[in-house]
Length: 129
Image (tube, helix red, strand yellow):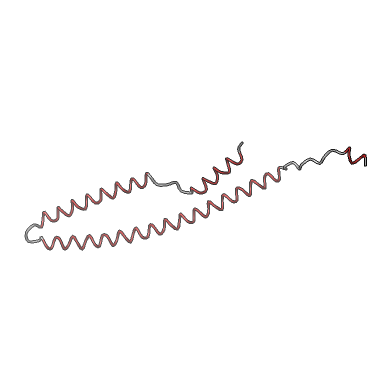
């Protein structure tokens, strides 16, 4: 009985390097899976955007060609040159507006892999004192 009182209290187990490495690998695996999922989603979204943008461009050009032909035919006998110049001015202004909008979108675009970056920031806050 006296021996039970003399024994030191059991200390909590110390974390081993093996457990720490396993936890790190598990954390890394979760981040890589999230990154892979986000990459697949971004790839799918980009492909759909490319396809529909291309189709929109083709159909838009066909509409413009048709409308331009109608305008030129309507003014062929009286104002063919001013009508052609007017169409070119309208198209140049539309081109300028689209280029400015595209540059603004490219400059103000959100960061890809936002969820992965947020998860890494949360892990950093948890791990550092």
